[in-house]
Length: 271
Image (cartoon, rainbow, N blue to C red):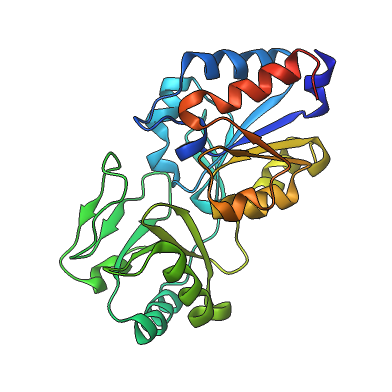
């Protein structure tokens, strides 16, 4: 039991990590997280999803603590349904960044996540949601994407692979925004300097915990900063090679209860 307390903070990504492909959390994972909580650890969700897109999952889990959302741009109080902290991506800079990317690769299709606990996901013509279960509102033109403050921009290209689009985007936008890839078909622009690590560090501080207290679970390149910050990073078997390269440990896939496997070992006194 004491071994579990070596990591007083359990930071988990959602998609491809805690969630199965059907957006559910297995009973085994629920039991393992509950047991870790009973041993004194805190579970903290750290996700690329904006706050409004996680509420149904949190309701199902009974999750009512802090959550890092929007790739680190939002610190959300699930129990109080309020934003504790957020930072927006300047819409003018976002437009310039898109122009620079399109100058390199041709037209992309874009979407935005609006800021706030009730913010919408807006998608322009030609953009198809890579995760069809997430709600989105189609707008008639790109200008309509900028109607309200945003936390990030999502990009898709008709031909380029995600890794290639992300690499080109990083070179094109430079310091205008942070570029990350959070899943298949999901290359994103977020405020410069904002990552899951910055959001996780802020949340940990609010909880009175540090990087040394933290074990992190993830599957995609957007989890790299979180792994570099945490004391121990666990990559799922289904993880992207870029994340596996910085992981301290590998777990079974999200479909095989990888988080539960690791937590059960720690609860049993393993290392």
